[in-house]
Amino acid sequence: MSGTLIEHKDIIVVGQQSWDVGIGSNCKNIALEFSKNNRVLYVNSPLDRISSIRERKDPKIQKRLNVVHGKENGLVQLQPNLWNLYPDCMVESINWLSIDPIFDLINKANAKKFAASVKKAIKELGFRNYLLFNDNEIIKCFYLKDLLQPDKSIYYSRDYILATEYWKKHGPRLEPMVIAKNDLCVANSPYLTDYCKQYNPNAFYVGQGCELEIFQKETYDIPEQLKDIPHPIIGYVGALLGNRLDIKVLSDIAQLRPDWSIVLVGPEDDSFKGSNLHGLKNVYFMGAKPAQQLPNYIHAFDVCINPQVLNGLTIGNYPRKIDEYLCMGKPVVATKTRAMEIFEEYVYLAESKEDYVPLIERALMESSESLVQQRKDFASTHTWENSVAEIYKAISMS
Image (cartoon, rainbow, N blue to C red):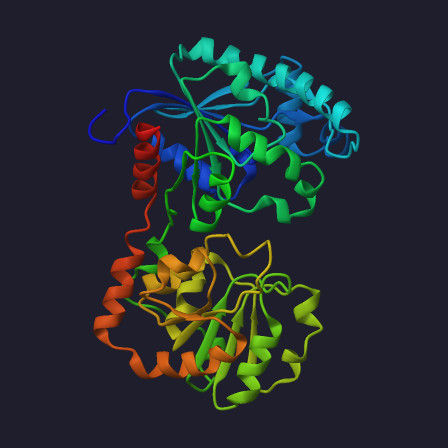
């Protein structure tokens, strides 16, 4: 160990997302960063019985079935120091169960099978004195610390998952216990850090890493869709979801300032499709775009916005899009939340719906090369290297 750097350790990473989900995730990025100086076993979720039936034609499920039936090896080396495990067991689907003692009994039986599979990989790789890193999984990993007996166990909180439908049934009972039984907790937002501290005093804010390379180009192409849209352009990039974005704020901005163009880039849910925004002449829907094209749109915005609805889904979550906006030097106006407090020196924070128009006006007036560079410099500190360094520091302190 050099300073707070942890090296030459064995680390087991488990969580909600399997490696082959096909999309990026915090957990995968953290595992990659861990593997620069340590040996890492990234464990996929075990196959559950309902998925094995309903999705049996999915190649990913067929792969898991082959491993369960001994037709394929479930331990795969991804790169030096990093392995991925497809557990060779099938577990029962239990989230639907309502009686807690029955749920707990079957969950413990599932955990024993899951842990046995992990132990085989541990033995094959020769892992010793390992760390266990749990990425926000409270059912499948509930008993894993007890069964694997790691040197230290770390619970990673990256979303307020209790606000989502799947976790509402058993999460309010289980997550506080999972947080309490781990040696420490790390979280990617101040809100989630405070939440974890209610149940475990060893809770640490470790920030968030972002992949910002595509937002750091020298030149950008103006999208054809934007060439005839008048400036100033007030823009948003991301999924347009009524349970996350305040449609009323967007509507008020557009109606109070008809001389502004409101540009929304992203797929719409039914709330947005049925909203009055489609009847406003200065609101422009661009539709969903490939990730590589998003910087071109952001580059054309005069001000970027993130008008979040304040609810359980949004209040504690780290808003990566803010880093993407700032990385391009753009002035940003966003709803003030506990998670947004870390941006307060670089973002105009709206405490009420009425704040948006005057703050956007201010952002349009105050933009300068000096502010542009300050925003870029701040966003550039939000790397996975820095976030994992904070995780190492938290482990060392606990």
